[in-house]
Image (cartoon, rainbow, N blue to C red; front, side, top):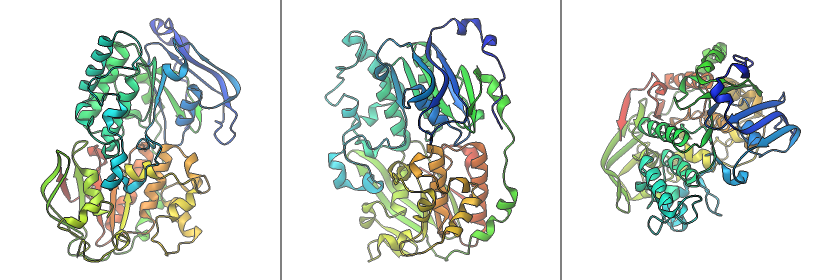
Length: 495
């Protein structure tokens, strides 16, 4: 569905129209033909506004953000900035694609669990400039006392204190978002740009972030731009919205009017009806996972104390808990990424860890997706090759079979695109296809719908249900949204 003009600029409130225009893009067309949107784009941010750019995955939201923050050269049109400082200081752009790579050393997937690799990892407090106490040097504007007061207030609102002594790569995805937003706000920008700020956050932290953005907007006068994929999940702090679909941007509208842009969810019902034929009966195990008396701590922080957990073939588990409760650590033990498993009483697929098995003996049974994987996956290969990499080493799958998997998920049109040219949501969706391609015995999905629009979530959920209908298939599923928990789930582990 193409965006519709629901309200003209003249119909916006007089109060809003009288405010200073901070960012104005008129008829913008970028030079890069690979990222160019189909029509010229016009966008406007006024002082005191919080704007949500809402649209499905792949609609062009990330390209728009880079256009209005100067990330792309314009072939046509004009970008005007009326800011009190240089744009690189006045605009803070927070994105989360590769947020663990905060140093010169490239982050890789298992690094978070390799203790010897973490010795050189900076502490969150060091990166926030507070390693030696509440040091406000380098913060712009105001007296030192003002800076300290804002820092303390910000850290209290976002509950940053418990993160200061943690190494950056040990932070959960939710903790990492709080850290990244705090780091941006310490600079007191004039405009804060957030790409999908709420994904990966548990309900209390989502509310904390909403409350913080209210204060940022109303008390500090920092204007906000954010992207969202779901019109039903627009926070109250949003004052205005644009709807984007297939690279085309609507006119500016009041936040409440965005609901009228929603179309019906279009699903290829024939493809979904045939989904069951993709999945074979799984190998039967007495115990897919058994953990007995698991204790894990990092320094003084206790992650697990005497944890016992058993997963049998054919069970479907929802693992739940707040950010930082240990969900990712738990999954790293199951997926053979965490070397601590060798010293713990853990059995996987009826075999005790540390009895001569290799990690590949374990991984051949598992399809896996997580935020850590997404952050570390930086291969700029065609999508077809990214999906192929989900097969076990030495196993062959031809291009037509790969295309069938992409068709099942409605992603065949991305087959020849380079992975790193995809939007964050498209990347996440392709990595979800990759988790299925070997038709695993155990499917581990950590926030699989993160960043997906309602149509893609609906389609992916149908494929997950089809997977679970095959005999002995086992599922471990993590989400912070109760409405995303598959109806086939049989058990819940609360951390």
